[in-house]
Image (tube, rainbow, N blue to C red):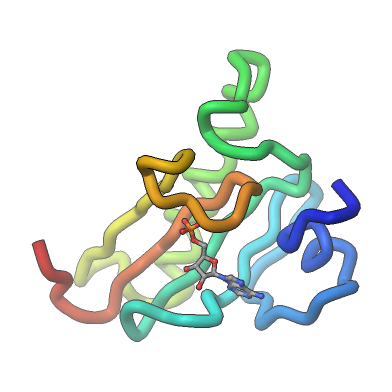
Length: 111
Ligand code: AMP
C-alpha cells in the first residue's frame, strides 16, 4: 500500500533500524521504545490488522511468531523473558494500520 508507513519502511522509502529481514517479514526497532528491547515484526505482505488476516494467512502468522522467538534469542532476552503484543483496531489502540507484533523485553515489565 503506497500510503502505508510500514510498507514504506519495507521498500526503504522511510529509514528504520532493522534487526532482521527475510522474504516474509521485516523486524526493526520501535522509534519510541517502551523497554530496552522493543522490536516490531511485520509481514512484508500488507495486512491492515490481525482482524484483516484470513485463514490462508495462518502460515504467515506462524512465521511471524517464530521470528519473534528467534529475535528474542538474538536480542539476548529469551531466558529473562519478554512480552509479545498485537494491537488491533481502534479499541486495541492500533496506531499504524499494518499488522505488527511488538517484542518487548530487557526489563521487568509492568502489569
Ligand atoms: P501500535 O499502537 O500497535 O500501532 O504501535 C505502532 C508502533 O509503531 C508504536 O510503538 C510507534 O512507536 C511505532 N512507530 C511509529 N512510527 C515508527 C517508525 N517510523 N519507525 C519505528 N517505529 C515506529
